[in-house]
Length: 345
Ligand code: SAM
Ligand code: SF4
Ligand code: SF4
Image 1 (cartoon, rainbow, N blue to C red):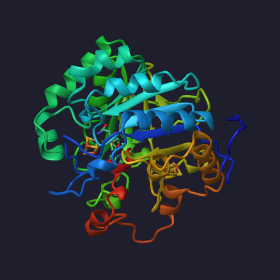
Image 2: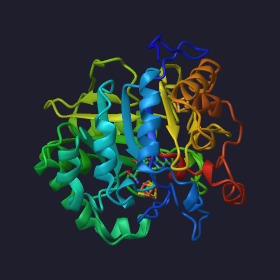
Image 3: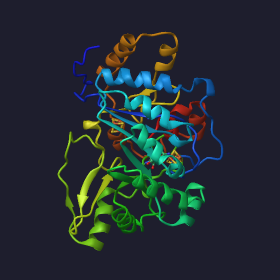
């Protein structure tokens, strides 16, 4: 297969692929899975590790260089290290990372590292166990902390912590999270609460904007300066530096979306390919794969589809008057692919 540079309608390359390995989760974060019951993807539709690895190889052949495993909770997928090993064999990839809620990381960090996982991001919204019970229906805060410690012991470089900031929940913990990250050799990235599918309790007033976060941290620490981006400048987080040199990031997906540089797409655990976090429809790659499509045919479908991509979901949401939750619960039940925990964050 040729490696001709592939770009979408706005000139954005296909550089990064997020692979959701399961739609199941062992937490129930209020901003992602606030409901009591969910419709799950049928078991027989879930891609095997071999199928995921094959698709990843095809994506790498058309230009993908960064892969991130996500979910749901990726560590609920048994023997995930075996998948990591299969994907890590792809010589074309520069980066193989995972986003996890950390609950099972203490058990699996060393095996994942040995299998070739390069980077880990752990979601940590609060340092207060009682808040995690209220907000994520999990009493296992200590396991997340142990997961973070295990990731460091396993030798993961550039450990990142993701904190979704919600007014009235954890917006008083920003400095504490910065301090925690500093003392754990990690970098925290504050994420604005997004109105993605699944966030059925979303409202504009709960969003703490990047500007508000910076103002709050500047009151505590003094002048904060932006860090000049390194690499290809396509990372979603803008990074900042405190006067003492500590760095942190903010993902301002609501107040200042970054669609114009977005090189990310997502595959769900059942092999549906989404070109945008907000896209209403995906492309069913599983059916083609299981019907015997060759790598060349799959690559052709991916190329043609990406070339026609016009998605800029978060920017379009800026223009919505009376902005509220993207989908109501009945629409999510009708098609669980619309859920963030299915699509992968
Ligand atoms: N379960 C894993 C975890 O929580 O890290 C991986 C999947 S989760 C869907 C990936 C990321 O999406 C997490 O960092 C989570 O905080 C983020 N996320 C989920 N819902 C969100 C929302 N409504 N707004 C902003 N970020 C969200
Ligand atoms: Fe929380 Fe991640 Fe599970 Fe969503 S998928 S409920 S963000 S742990
Ligand atoms: Fe990319 Fe869509 Fe997110 Fe914009 S909203 S940054 S196009 S995934």
